[in-house]
Length: 142
Image 1: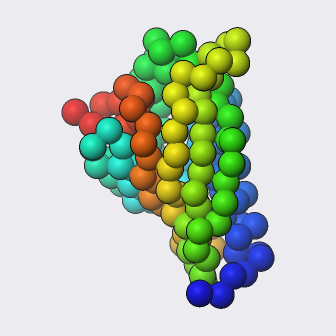
Image 2: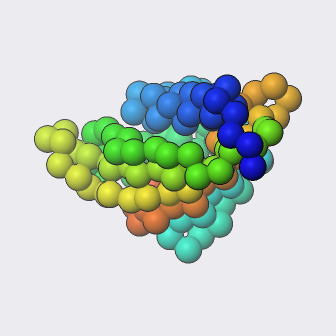
């Protein structure tokens, strides 16, 4: 598979956009970092989010779950490209959710698949080892 620097930069930028929105708890920024339908596999649960508005509608509940765990912010410990080709990049991402003192609450690895759809780069699939209550987008997992 051919590695394309521009493709990889677009994919990395989509992840960074999502993470910026996550730490700001800005659902619109987070949604802009995704492509839909968006799929998440975590805690043995498979969640499919059909569109941006459905995702945005879950975020107040996710924020409550994060705060109940003592969450303050998330750091990206590492991100590396596993595979890259036209219109799609697979990334191995290591994240840590932290409390206000910077202590880890959840330390986990994920595989993120970033795609280009209609000239928009966004994360379309995440498979994560996260065990947080907020891992599966709150009410969508019920």
